[in-house]
Length: 141
Image 1 (cartoon, rainbow, N blue to C red):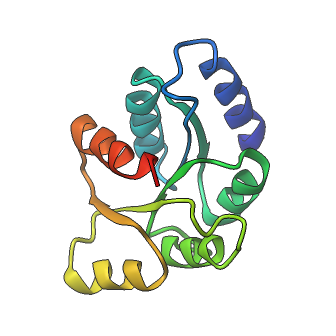
Image 2: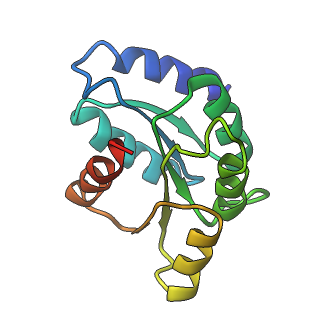
């Protein structure tokens, strides 16, 4: 059911202006964070797909082939580190930028994110400017 809703949303978002056709996947178990990030990105013209956990994210990556992925670290069952590692260990998606979203801002957490292949670490709460700067920084990679 959640997948159908997200798929419906991503189709509706294509009706507006697109920002270079960039498709972004936002993965977070918090509906509030997902909706906030989605709203900020859609208003900037990006095509957004959402997932509420790591397992759903892997399915969405295969189905939608996003250009950039935001993933929360602290999620049940399959956390952000594990999700990022699985994505980066797949040759087809290895070059897709993965940006970790988290309220954990310790150096150890950031280092662990780098070890699994994340490209950037964005601490929550984030502003629209921070989110869009992260997209601009990694959209060309």
